[in-house]
Image: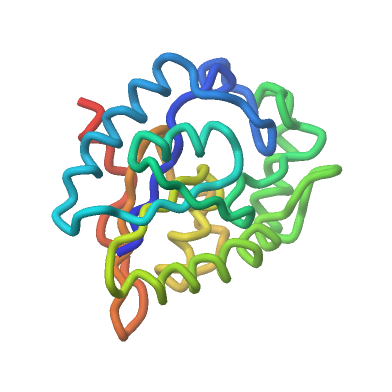
Length: 193
């Protein structure tokens, strides 16, 4: 099983800013959320979980609540928003959002397209899926790579990203079998109470 965890909240999340590759820490709420994730996942019946994280601080901090041993995989970092990083969502014009939604190969200036994101994340998912036969693997990442993982599991285009809500500190699960991946749960936040 691949257990996909979106990191806890940061001050930029709270302010409605696009973070992308900005290397920001969790805020107080984010640490509380990460603690709840850790409390839940440390109770998994399979025992010690393998934990793999994005290199960005907010993901690594969240992962540290799950395990003292965290591997880092560069391919799991958030999509690059380019010129929009650190800016409010409202700074992106409606026509720019529409262009982004219409073309998975479109990227804002200095940023990354959804197609490029999927091409980066897919090999990591395939490797982790092959390694998850013996034990569950927790993957701590960001909204866009997790949505790419959902597209991969469902064998659909990355365009579904625009039609999926993924909350902070949520957990999604992808089961791995000889027939391939299958989505078990998505955007579970029950552990946040």
